[in-house]
Image 1: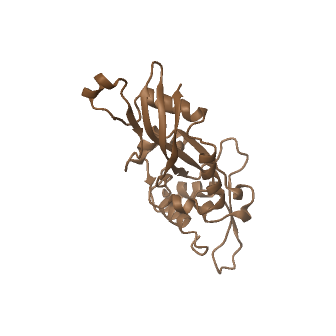
Image 2: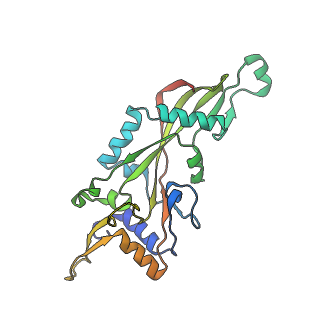
Image 3: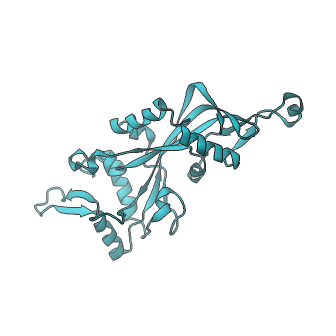
Length: 249
């Protein structure tokens, strides 16, 4: 990776190899719980860098062209979050004014701050970005080395007012970020371990070595080093030209 200047992938590899053994399994790979201390990387992957790749930019653009922040999946999740008061609410009107101005409106969502784990309770939708190298290793690039297949997650910011059974909602800004798990687990139903290409040291005459997820797990078992972790990028916020309004449910 260093020879190819795949610097993000190299940094993530060094973090994995340089940390005591820890395995993310089950829901931990989706950011829910963990089997040990949950290691998180928030500095290696930047949205600007991710979007410099055509396949990632195409998926990012779809989030806005298809308005993934207001489709049924997003509405259902947003309704559940608002109803459970899991999104930050800030009253727009002061309490003394509510008597004369009627139904209180409040701001919700927005940037969850430095605690990236709060994003898990705030995102309203997601969209996968599939790496073509999964089926054609010759298409591997720096984004493959760092993330391979990953997901974009969608945050929203806006205003809402409670109704009899739900909320009148207006979304003014949309935030998008990447969350991925850096691990070498295989699908339990897979017939073989996921291939990671054919590797050899630069300038060496030795035969290339076929590498798979199983090799990483074997290394961890033998050395007790190799820690899976979650990756979070920064959030890229976009203010909508016109707020998107709808009623929930």
